[in-house]
Image (cartoon, rainbow over all chains, first blue to last red; front, top):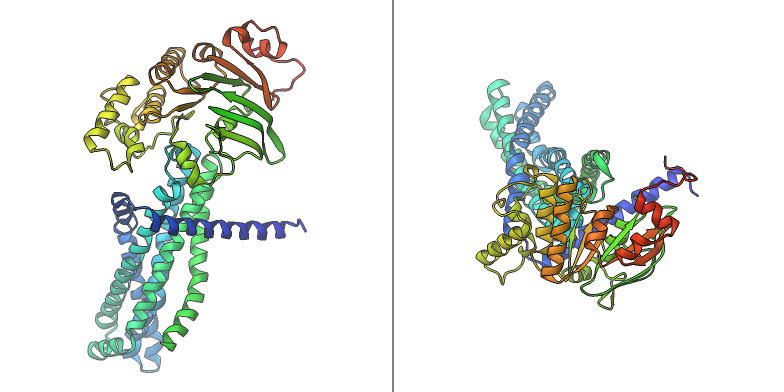
Length: 259
Length: 248
């Protein structure tokens, strides 16, 4: 019964349970205590404003490469003007939220885990507790709330820039007809695609902040512990985003079909 | 008053504390001595609920804190101030912001009240004028002083010190000892110091508790401890290793 595989599964399930408890504490705290606006606005600045460059570059180049690749295939069957419709739908419901989530997981998830991990190994978290401050109220809630606010905004920017860059590549570089392209883009990209993308990004924000906070608050001793927590925060939140994306696509797709 | 009953704590398969009993009266100054890795800091952290014991009771003013969850513990911890071994200052904040931190959610105090309290606390630890410095700009001794200012600024009833003189030169250690005594006498607080610095133990404690082999081995006044002929106590005071023991 104590095989390494069983132990690994038990630890993995235990970790999931602890993250769920952390989420419960954070939600409880959010509705019980006042969030300090100063802390929240700093976190929105750090997670949102400072992530813009990396998210916008990713969005733009993803839109451009998707346009080129789709055009090369569609051109064979003379469907050039449908290219931007594919780019629009893909960017809104899949690539925009997922790539923004992954880029923010790399930048912000790592930073949260490293900061909280360092605070833990230098006893700053214990100091907070002795100063009658709950680490969830002071550290987790502002980061989680800020990520929930920032991710949809970053995703919206990424989608807009991705489609815009795709349009420029399609129309000016590959010579697709602009009027028909625009017509098809607007015709096939529905508000529901944008809504699905924004709902997904809201959830990915929570995943990135929660996994980063959990890994930081529970990191091992010393520099090695902080390093491992940082790596695991990025890896686990990225994997969680990719897995969640599949289920969200199914559930949200079905839900909006019914509605 | 702090009372500990039959406290047990193990990390993995290694027991650290096995049946610790102690009682610290209000206003008393107690020093806990013992070998490195002997569980002194673990015991101290259990007094304030930072660590949960495996068994036993920790009573603060007659209230058992062991079954309390983190939220209830926050209320009990308002009675405590704690100076950590590495000072544990918040490195993203200035000295003044660190010392003012306990008042973050106190809406009954104006910013001027908080600033006055910070100035008074920094004056008490002889660090007036350091308000705008960052912890990275401070020496080890200064960091501990700021840590102490932060621990006493809200006038707690009990102050815990975890190895306050470790890593400091003898002159700075002496000044920290004097600060502990000043805080003890001026604020009339209950003081618990964990240390293996015998000079410090002799000066700041009304009573010394020696932790040995996972239990309280001796409890006596500094004079009695230093006059003791018990071989375990004598070896510790004189810093003589036991030839039968392997240290590495």
